[in-house]
Amino acid sequence: MSRQKRLKHFANMILRESSVVDNSHSMEQDMDNEFIKDFYEEAQDILQNIYEMLGKYLESSDKVEALNSIARGVHTIKGSCIMFGMTQLNKVSHDLESYMGTLKPYANEIIQEQVTYILRVVDKMSELLANGDKGSIDDLPLAPKLAAISEPVEKIVEKTIIEEEAVTQEENNIVSIKNWKNDKESSTASGSGNGNGNGATAVQALTEVIRVPVERVNQALDNIWEIFLIRNQLAYLFGQNSTWLNQHPEFVRSWEFLDSSLETNITELESKTMRMRMASLKSIYQRLSQTLRDYSDRYKKPIKLHLIGEEIELDKKIIDILYEPLIHLLRNACDHGIEEGEERASKNKPLEGNIYLSAKIIGNEVIIEIKDDGQGIDPQKLLKKAKEKGLDVSRIQTEKEAIDIIFLAGFSTATEVSEISGRGVGMDAVRTSIQKMGGTIKVDTNVGSGSVFTLTLPLSMSVVSALVMRVNGQVFASTTNPIIETKIINYSDLNRNGDDLYYMQRNNYIKCIDLKNDIFIQSIDRKSLVKKDDGAICLIEHNGQEIALLVDCIEEYYSLVIKPIPSNAPKIPFVLGVSILATGEPIFIISLTKLCEFVLGKKVQEVGVYHEAA
Image (tube, helix red, strand yellow):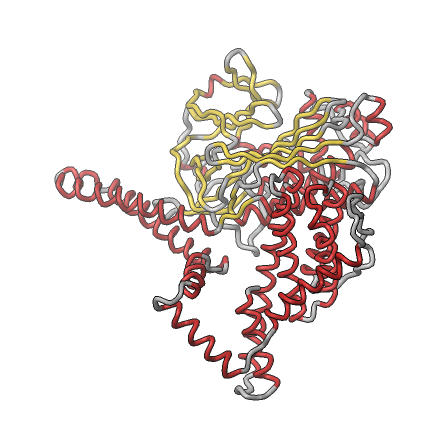
């Protein structure tokens, strides 16, 4: 919190205590809530910056300035939190600042041991901040000393405290109420006039960075998407009246120019507004690093987390949901993937395990990978465990299908239930969360070498590229990310083997799911449907192999605004949301991957495993 805000807050406290102002409790409460909210937001930003600086400290070219920057951040939090009665946070930050004061003359001699200790204390500060100063502060490790320190620690701490008190005294000198009002007026005047520059700089900073509630951004986006839908409906209206329009070419040319300009401006407005709702992966990365440090310390298992792509930005909706799947995958990599020290040594692996978390953008998607150099996943062990649990594995023909068993609810390979694993409630939740975001998850593994979990997600959950299809007179749309190819076929091109249907392509038999008979059996007026000899298939990738979905026709690609299913509506496992076509027709947006799983009966297996595990 800035000095000006601290002065203002203290002045308000004095005003209330001296009863100089009107005793309006709601106004005072709103003012306090505003200051507390500002404090929390700014403290979180400071902690995030401290994490980033600590992560790069040992590679920093100017370690003195890096340590000073970290100390300034801790000092700012220390000076602000005491105003809100956060005594524990104040003590932890004070002790940390004093400790860093002892390290300042030896900034270039600091090693990983000291950085790790500072990280632990910052973790505790973050925990206290999140819990409103509640929690124990007795579990912090002892502060490690530098061998290079020759001056007595007490003397260095004493000098640091004296320097602190000089700064704190200057900041905490509360002027009289009258002078504070004059300062406020002069500050406003200097901001609007041509003062000495300080006021102008402050005003400039305020205009450059404005905190806006996410709800307001969402409301603006809702209005933009309504305009987006209206523009699509206008285009459809013009298409329906093409005969009349052909007789008025001048009007058509004018309309096309305006429509093109309207589309461009809507797209740019949506893009710029969406950017307001974008957030980087940095915050998630830092929380995952903290989780790994806690795990490594608690279980005495040395593991290093390598982070790549923390600057990648995603829709905040995705950021909010993404943390839970990533934390499950990270814990599984630590607990199931990385071997114990003796086992790694027997395999000629370094004692310290490695987990790599990377993110990159390809087109309109972000690819996130979690890779470890552990023992990998043995498909034969998974099959054996599945049989022990009474699962029907007769349909599993490939290793990829066997590995996919880990995503079944209630399934776990752990022999004992611990705080990290063994309950079988992790990987199925991971896949469900990823699919709710319109994404996919893929596993690649080598026994003895490690595993890679690849998450493919859209950059935004709001506007999606979708393919519209019709089956038995019913219309639906699908996101395009799992689709490999679409084509028109004749039903005679299909081959039947018992109850299974196959499509022949490039000398390969591809399993085909007939949506007319498997899902969309009912229609509004089945009798009115005309029997046709041709249809269309949509080829998708599922579990590393191609599957064909048979539909009546594939219409065209649309950019659709996806809306969530109302909370009181029936839950359909493969429906992601709803939208409206240019015709005004409502439409479901479905996940073809989840649709395949539903048709192939995997949900029945999942329910069986869940009850068996329970």
